[in-house]
Image 1 (cartoon, rainbow, N blue to C red):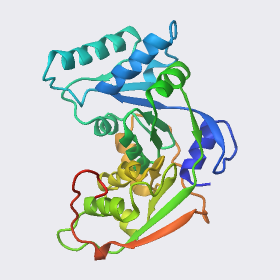
Image 2 (cartoon, one colour):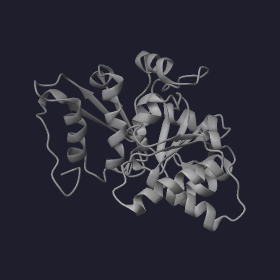
Image 3 (tube, helix red, strand yellow):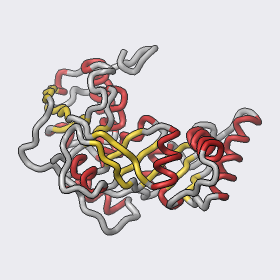
Amino acid sequence: MNMIEKILAKASGRKEVVPGDVVVANVDRMVLHDLSSNLVARVFQNEMSGATIADPSKIAIVFDHTFSPPSLADAEVLTDARKFAAAHGIRNLLDSGCGSIHHVIVESGLWAPGQIIVGCDSHTTGYGALGVFSTGIGNNSMAALGFCHGKGWFKVPNTIQIFLHGELQPGTAPRDVAQYLEGFLGEDSAVYKLVEYAGPFIKGLSMEDRFLFPLMSIDLGAKAGFIDPDEKTEAFARAWSKAKDFDVPKNDPGGTYERVIEIDVSKLAPQVACPPTVGN
């Protein structure tokens, strides 16, 4: 099994899973920004009368979209989120000025390798650089299965490996490589797949630059992206995660892939994405 399959198996009480299996797994962290928390709260309050939140400590809300509200209506969104958090014992509310949601979650230590993190923001996939299975889910799923039961259901995806090697030309950055993949592979090239980013180029990157690749896997249509953990991953987790007792899941040797795509990054020039899409 690869890293993601191991996480899904453990979280659903199975010895192993294979692509195509449907699992109901325990979720470790639910992340929401100010706008999505408001939408999920409406579902929870209006469509699930009498429901309770199973474990408020698993929920984190970060104000990063309208943290400086330009209107009364926008300010009321933040006020409503604060009231909802207070009413339901959600203590991980990181208020205006903390930063962008996914950086805040990482820097606040609200994660650990081997966990499942779900969010109502599409770029929740970024935590796949940290030895985590992370993906976006809808408001109803978050309210009904996440809030009420601390669980999520997933179909185990097939995996595509993108093997990157070579050294960048002067003026070309890791962001250019991540951006190039969107246009080269296509924005619908990995719908409901796992995308593993591998190869010596990825291994040579800092953890901060690695984060770019799973982060943008959603723009390929992927369910999740990930990088097989190594010593850099573990050192970063030991430095930043609040959890002290965790195992770092790693791919079994000899894994199989739906396809492998090899790219020499030394041939890439700086990239520019033009409207209307990130893959243009």
